[in-house]
Length: 368
Image (tube, rainbow, N blue to C red; front, side):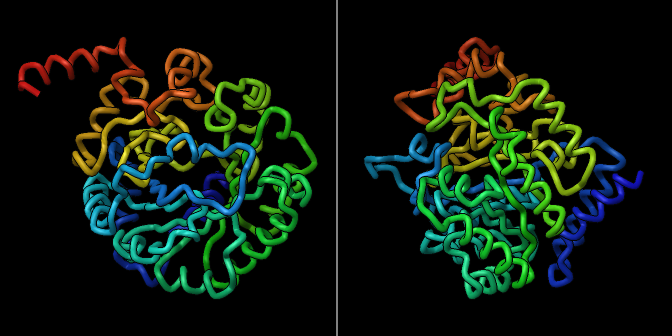
């Protein structure tokens, strides 16, 4: 019970903002509803605003989803406002913004403002190199609640190497953490862990840092996508997963995405989470490069329902589909590795699914 209370108290601190009464009321209604009935709403929409970045990280997958020809239109501020409104109607209460490097996006403030920051939890993900004291204060005044800073080792040389080899990146990230905290922002640390790094001194140092600063450390599972496409050596074993489970149960400060759901424990892809590229392509997860539609062509609800019609996304899967479900990776995700078009259309990936046949039959009947 004490562990549950500690986790609830920490969640409360990260989401409670006295200056956002509309947000507080929305959260109270969602929490109360989730206690008494099964939660079926959307929770979190993750916008990738641009793929430009000032670092060259080892695991980067940005180039896999980027339109190198520059021919595809990008979402406008008006598009973000519409998508935010549609997502909120489905229950979304958290909008996250990432890149590339998010703080390089020129109209970042306009986009955030278009997503009702005073009625939602607003998160910005950054590598920390550009988060000055002044920028942190500006984000706080804009309505940003949480800054997620990428930190992959407590050892400067290891972090710098993982992030492309440029010296000083670790120091800038550490400075960014303190700039954010001093500005009144909540901080989340995001660390990618692999089979080789999970037990390392650098990762263990992050556990201690998170507890010392009283900030949440999210362990990001390794995914065989992007620069790691098809690389199974990085994947976690069952023993690794058991170790992570014990860690997350021992303290509220260490987590994976599975602990963030309003509904059941497990993978929240499609059920509670959607990820959008700058071109409006809608995925169920940043690491599953499978497109279920485009918000420039269809409402968010139609795209989400399309994903939920598949058994792989209908329930809270107990394994990470992108990282730890070997069967899913082999049967479906592997099709997206080095695909000519990314994200790969859902009906090509799940060709054997009854949902695809049903959709094709419907399109024939309607003359589409």
